[in-house]
Length: 277
Image 1 (cartoon, rainbow, N blue to C red):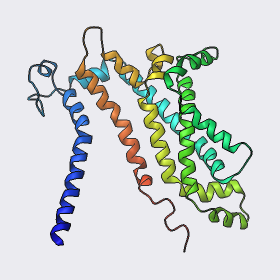
Image 2 (image 1 turned 60 degrees about the vertical axis):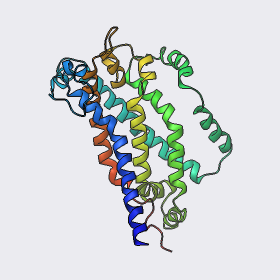
Image 3 (image 1 turned 90 degrees about the vertical axis):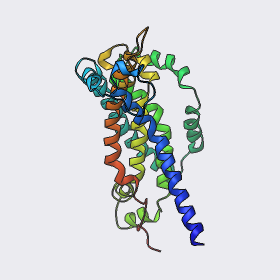
Image 4 (image 1 turned 30 degrees about the horizontal axis):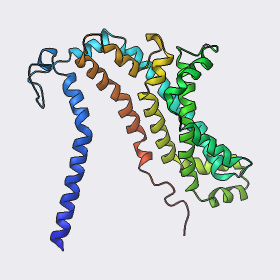
């Protein structure tokens, strides 16, 4: 029996190592190409690590390209979208979880329907809506579009977290004299920090990597985001892989920092110890 348990443990650990290696290998290859000199990209063959490394690609991206502008725009758009969507979805998710009202079923169905349309078929109507308002080629327009498309899913995500919290908690607070909103703010929201963190992470990642609307609604570098800026490294006759990969490595930094900040909440139990018995 001990041998079987040992074999199972070893197999489990090996499976995890294989999964981690497969998941991280593209990131490793991204870094490898970013530090490989241009002359070695096509002459050195397939190597796990280049014989010489260079930081010239990173210097060019930071000092001689518009990447800092794209980087700033992506941080503004992604951060603003994540905060707005999380705040709105917390309220709407709580309403769907706790209240019964007329046309609730149809409202939920309508929100689901909005997730079924291919995004490409909505580009032209959205452009026609935003153009008269002067919201094309602006970060505000992108935040509005990203908020509209991420809000339904974020609402359902937050609703699932609220459904897991016993109603007894807020009812006890209301018996003690708290209002519904006070109970929501003081009792329920702190217990949904893992859900808020998950929603923030999902929305931030979705907005950070979105290309279609950023490409269609933005026409200049001043309001372009990082995914659109990456296309600038692709010319008519060549692709500057070194600089593109260097920009990709730099673009990973905000996402990594963001998830490190919310990691503590992602691993917390949802209502551990909140209710006795």
